Length: 335
Image (cartoon, rainbow, N blue to C red; front, side):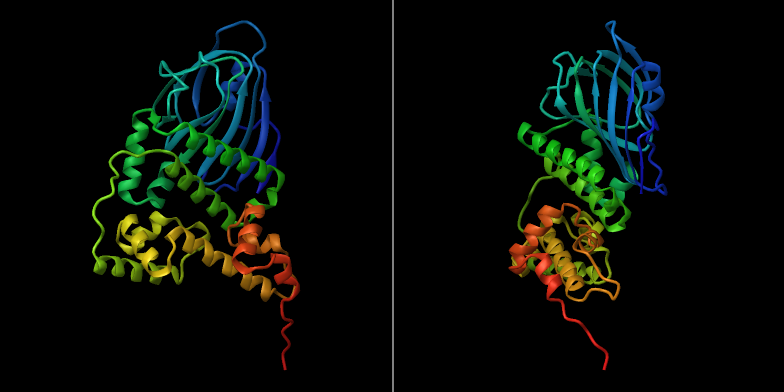
């Protein structure tokens, strides 16, 4: 993991290490250069200082950035290849548009590789997320991935204001956390959890057309799907595992698998995976390695990067704080 506060355009490279940083430019030509992986032409629409600020997080599968603009301008050009992008507003200017449509429409402005045309108003600030299309197709069930890409083709992912606000708070929290605790990005489990959680929260936010609930799946199909899912979980990397991936391994739909887990364990597949990881952390704390172990290290190793939430869930599940578990861990002796 690296942190860099110089002016460096973030680029998605699957083999590259994660990167956090910030930059500030006061010239539209510099903005064009450092807006990569976009190919843009920028024209200010009023006189005055052009000032652009950006804070970003780059992982192998996505780019997350918060940016603000002081001067209004028009921007056109081409969106990044191989990436699905969307914007989450923070502070909107009513004159801002995306393909001549106001940015305050109900939904998230979205793009696929291709053309771009937008007007950005003075004082505008927003979040931009770019997700690798390859990651989308590898992580999601085929029907869900196709529905997401089809929705992005319309240039607007439908979502309610309440859900958009929740997504905005999550993304801002993620940016703040990674900049405050950059060491978390040194843990592969955290990176995988960040990426799968971001995609899952996007799916929770938008209303994808074409995915309708039908009749209750047959018991035999539910049991077969559960058995396959459990067999897959024996050797799976749980920190980066998404429910659609689990559905793909089990050969059933998400609805079928949810029915099966609820009937068997009284919890959804997502809750099951999270509880399984909490138990894995507890085992680490109870049996720490000879060189010692911190709670942060144990949490990060299982993909828990929101430490406050992790501690609260841990205490609720086990009736004690992680530190109490670590303090009473048995000291194993060889005899």
